[in-house]
Length: 507
Image (tube, rainbow, N blue to C red; front, top):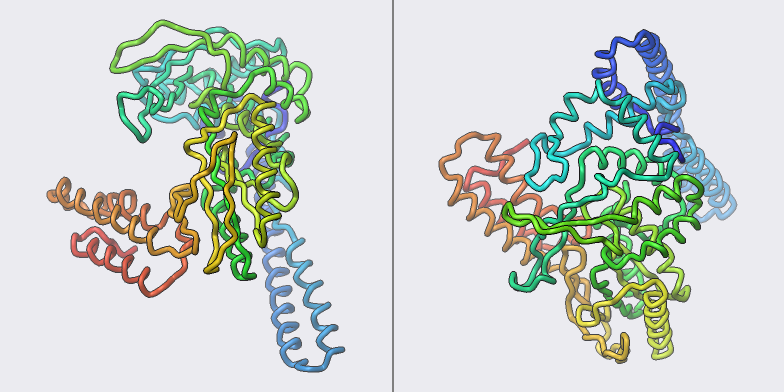
């Protein structure tokens, strides 16, 4: 963990991208590296061919067993035997892992370190220098010079990790305030985004790749934020499936939507280091994180004007590579503070606590869990925004179980509908309100496109406009919506309007 070049993921795409630049160095080992890689690709192709044949045979076997199960009808002995065989066949199909390039090829240490640095550089955003970037180094310059500077950067990064220190110049961040909802005159309605040195972000990416592979299995399974393979949609599917199953069992589900006040800015550096230690981060790397969090300073940049600098005493930088992952580490044990009957689902700081409710004792149990969450916040110096915390009872009963939930001695407001991760959820899990809202937004965007792009006749541009501004609104979290006739009529009407504008391209 103390070296950014230890281990690391490697695939054919990364090899091709890094190899293009690597070849410019004219290293004698590159030709041999390519031969080993190409030989591994040949072995992988043969292994995959055999794997696909095996998959077809196993799926055919499962189809036969299913037919035997149907033919068994009421014969219990035959049915049990067919079920047992079918279960074993399905387990074999699941356990049969598809071969990957990692099974046949391991890059040399030189290629590994090159890949770590260059992929970090190639992952930078815009090629133009932002006016608020502290170091004024364009990303395009780093990308074009990647093949020439990677060795120097690698030495610099490893030196920083071994000494447990980060250069002071990389601890300066320029804060650009991004407005949120609410009055623009209220400073609390702005989100502070940190613009950091691009070289330091390349370094952070290297550290992130190693850290996330080390702690991923220790992160709570109901944390869906900032993790590969998880999203807002997957969290919504999980939570709504739990609620739907409870409603099908004629139970009620009470859900409390929690809102943390300035969650990312409230993280205590000292307590975060304690949690990193519990995650197994020790030695030089823990010293490096301590230095990474301490001695930072920031300044605000607005409309080309820059303020004086002030020290950063708490929080993780919003806009950094490591910041989101460090926040996940900090709140990881929050779900462990409640009882087993309740569930806490999280998307970063967006948190909801819910449980099935049959009677008042169940409500009291949920209230106790809320009290435990408040105690957790007190211990770990996090604040809940009481005015934005809400409760909603999902039920189809005419006589639901009602109670007055409290948070910090303040009664929580009962809702009939709540916007949850971008979609409108109602207490009866009907989607009419959500569909009306997204079709209204999509129609508004269609009108905007018609007014501003009426002279645009390029079919590719029109397709991009439709997909990015209209289709994205109609398709977001669509896996959660039940397909009813009314919903389909709303969606088809919006698509029809797009067709009339010549925006809906068949592809």
